[in-house]
Length: 137
Image (cartoon, rainbow, N blue to C red):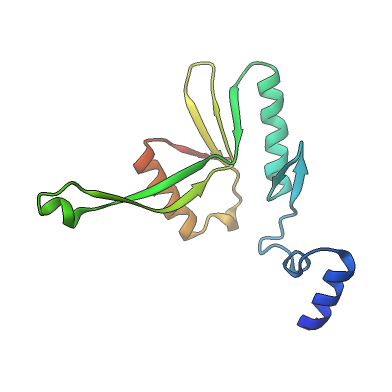
């Protein structure tokens, strides 16, 4: 399909051209309770977590919590000055909640193809900077 034809279809359907192209991993965006999820698998996990929260098994459920990835410029520190901290990006997990024992759990819904090198690098950086463990579901 040409770009012009895709634009005409998008205009006719009232969506963006990117929405017609589809997701790289064939995930279908889903909306539940006014919250947009990138895949049906992520939406199913949200339903499971809301049931656990209603039963009192978890508390403080949060969707799409952001974690900043900060980098310290060490060259300034070596000169005797205070180190400068710069935010070089933000990692957004899928869910965050607290267990009855008080443990903070951060979850990311992943399938095999979505565990890219970039994701693994961001995951390691966030775990090291924030002192958390990201659980892949």
